[in-house]
Length: 245
Image: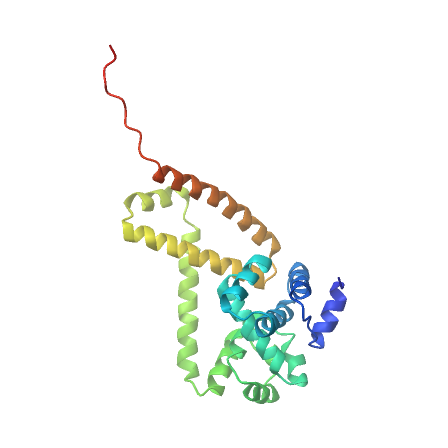
């Protein structure tokens, strides 16, 4: 197994393993390295999708099992990695140093469009939202209105998440007590979406401790869910009201 420096050197030259086992080991080693490895992991994900997996189901199952990636994050990685594999060498060097959240909007562009944008802009000096604007302009979309709307929606969503996170157990028990069947479905769906987003954010930012904590939480929750399902599946005990002689 190559050390981290050797893996970085190979991927900086866009040399990737052809065997799935070695490719997986590279990606896992980069995950342990933390922040700064997102672009290189994305290259490996894209290579696996292109050359090893014939169907999306197997591809996503591999990423979930070996890298703990949800399907949304895996798809994002594949798009970014494909962009990095296809771009010309000079442009690759400029892109490989960018953060994941900047690379994602750029992955919407074709290689020619991307090269043109790189010739005019220093993307490393732009914010994520500024890059979004440049991408929209390159694609001929109405950038100002769409980005302002996205930013407003993002800020509103973040405030909702922060408010939900501030709820204590007493508040939640009140919600649970008054929840209808449709409310319960909404609670479960909302929790699932927020958890998936949190896991993806922790992966992007290399927050290994956060992932460790959520893994412990999920293990505990899984135990509670299984016990709850068993209770619901078991017929209720009928108290014996017969008088004994």
